[in-house]
Image (cartoon, rainbow, N blue to C red; front, top):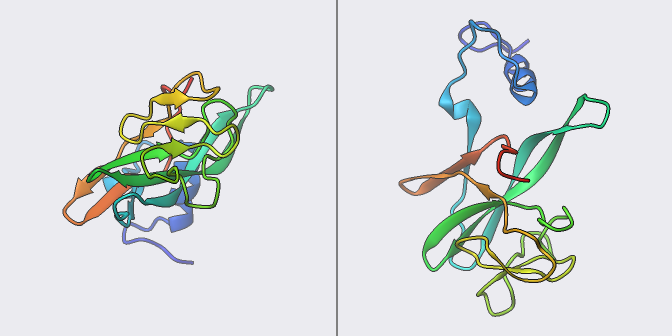
Length: 155
C-alpha cells in the first residue's frame, strides 16, 4: 500500500476530501485543494475536472465529477463552471469550444445563450443569471484552480 510521509494512504486523502470530512488531527495542505492547469491561449479554453457534492431529495448526498473551464479573453483569465445556468447542461458545443464564432462571447450549446467572457453576465438567451464563477490563482506561468466545486452562490 502506498503511503505518504506521515503514514496516511493517498486514498484516505481523496476519499475524505470528496466527502469533505476530515479527522481533527489531519491537516490537508493547500496543494490538495488546488490543481494546476495550463494557461489557455488568447480566445481559447482549457477544461478541468471538479468534484462536486449535490444534495438528493432523500437528504443524502451524491459525489459527482463535473467540469470547469479556464479562458483567456483580452489577455485576462477567468474560470467558470461548465454548466448552463438555465438548463444545467455543459456549455461547450464541441468539447472545449466555448467561444462564439467571432470570439467575443461564450455560448451555451443547448439554447444558444450568450455570455460576456470576463463577467459571465448573460447577454441573450433564456438564462436567468450569469455563469457560475470559480476561483483561480495565477502564479507566474501557471494557474491553479479548485479541485472541488463550491455551490455557494450557485442558486
